Image 1 (cartoon, one colour):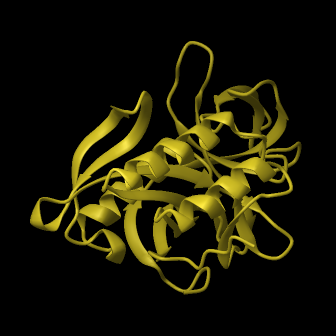
Image 2 (tube, rainbow, N blue to C red):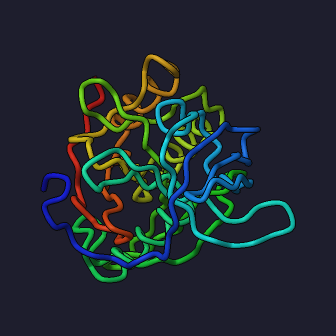
Length: 241
């Protein structure tokens, strides 16, 4: 399903627009509102986001006044009324809603046995339970870095944590568990997912070897449109080339 073609609606967010002035650090963005006033916004995506959060970018934020910040950056407009959904907690909430509704085909019949669970010394997003008493482990990653070829990519900076998670999933698969790493491709213009081998070739190779070991690499596409969060694809094409 192409961007803007009417994906499955998973919820509406109350968002306001502003223009990015600069990113002060990993967690804070200075922005300018339509009326000209400047303020600080909380950014919960700690990736580099160089192609999305830059001076002049049009940001969408959820007002949440705090001591230092006026709200949380949720999306970035990319044109045509479409926006990338860059806030990982919102991505996860939408992913879970789609899962609950049975909209993610490869998770039908599988339930959430635990969240933020420690397995093999690492914290993974989910423990799974499935048909016939089957069990599994799953990690979900945000992928909003858009390649020139139209792929949503992960990571946009070297990720030691991501490498470790892949290793743990391989261990789980070898112990007989279903093991899944799912990427939330949350940019409306992407047509597939691939790991960013240019940024982290070690992670890229680990993913290839993980697939050989039986780990599933999945991608789910979603985006923002008019404040609505839309699910475009529950099983976006994945390339490990």
